[in-house]
Image 1 (tube, rainbow, N blue to C red):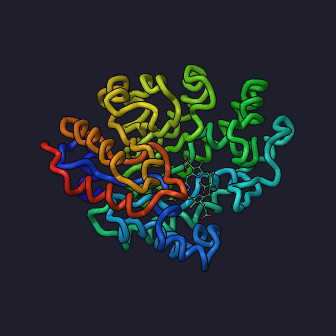
Image 2 (spheres, rainbow, N blue to C red):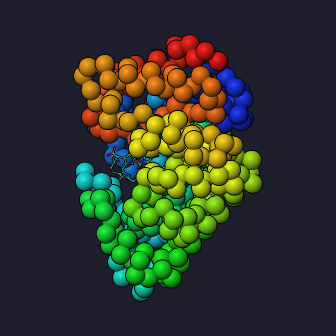
Length: 344
Ligand code: CP3
């Protein structure tokens, strides 16, 4: 591990300010990314380790964030299980989603060679990144991955077909979740062997089911992944978006840090999350779309109050950037985090 504000904070070491990075910091708002996309498809950027490294490091060069997140997608796991994935203007689409899961699930066969280009990309990123910048690996958490595999696309925000299967057929759902988890463990552990400083597990759709059911039927799978990563001495950030009061049950057995969405203020979240677990978040990314910064400045003042005494905190948004976020507002926030006297 390199000695940085980012990695020190992950270890619980008090630093003069919180580290800052953003979910979806590469592939959304950056003019340099949008320019590359005129030349290459998303798929081409993901498959070519040189280009992947270049895109991963764009926000480091253009924005000055403290960490780079691997440029890839959570849906590489279903793809490596043999599912046919397309990235379209309307988002990701699977040609044959698992809607007849009882008959289809046994066709899911892992092919780990499909993930190898990602490890090569991590090697290139590590060679090129400044020593004081952290490197974040990631994958989708099992429930979110399950939702996409069964639903087949992201057009229906309720993921009703996936949820129906989850309730109708717990046994088949558990089998699919296990297949996802087994390959995710392999993938995550390989990432730890290629020099990531931290691993983030994205459970974007945790909020689609009641939190007690999440704990009962999903958390055991999550723990298997996070424990495998931590056994390789890499800390884990778990981001269960929409888990709500279920955050009270995310303890240090599960993760080192937990990502907080924008539903709760950080003091509210901090009050219920295990004291040993650090927090990450949680500026509402939609505030970054505004023209007038009055509201943004008001929100930032709340973060300043929180950051004075909370050292195990990573500044981030409460979810990924949206396409209408303004890069100037993003830069403003990063400069604010770096130039503020946090009174520590
Ligand atoms: O900075 C980065 O962009 C980091 C890399 C990254 C991507 N996807 C690239 C991407 C990460 C960390 C993800 C995670 C991801 N992918 C999640 C979890 C986090 C979240 O935002 O909720 C989910 C649910 C997905 C699935 C996915 N991939 C969707 C729903 C979409 C389409 C809509 C969208 O967000 O753009 C994608 C496509 C995708 N993944 C793009 C990028 C840059 C857009 C591709 C393009 O340039 O057209």
